[in-house]
Image 1 (cartoon, rainbow, N blue to C red):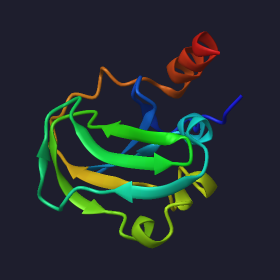
Image 2 (image 1 turned 90 degrees about the horizontal axis):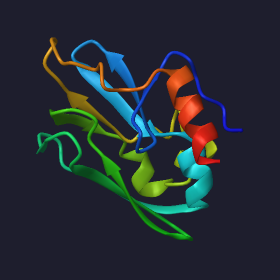
Image 3 (image 1 turned 135 degrees about the horizontal axis):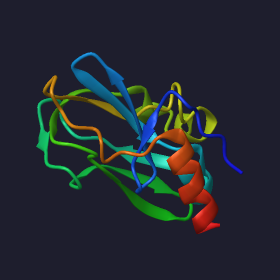
Length: 129
């Protein structure tokens, strides 16, 4: 079973989220990257782009196909991981570290209650297995 770091929040669509002040760092989970296979290209949004919850914020291309990455909440893109443009396989090698995809600037009062804890996400993975 994929590792599920306990300090992160998770979306049912297999994105992980880490709160860092007024921004959220977003990437895809170990489980998601393992299902994708080798990542060969990442299409990143532009800094300042705004997204509603559930909107496609990035696209990850792998040897198996193309997958969309979804915004977990409303926010504007603060920064993107430009390193992924040259080394997209960082998503496979270190999904919870150097393979982060982008950060969203969010309102301090943003509601993250709909996101899953590590335990809830682990349960989701077990149900999908």
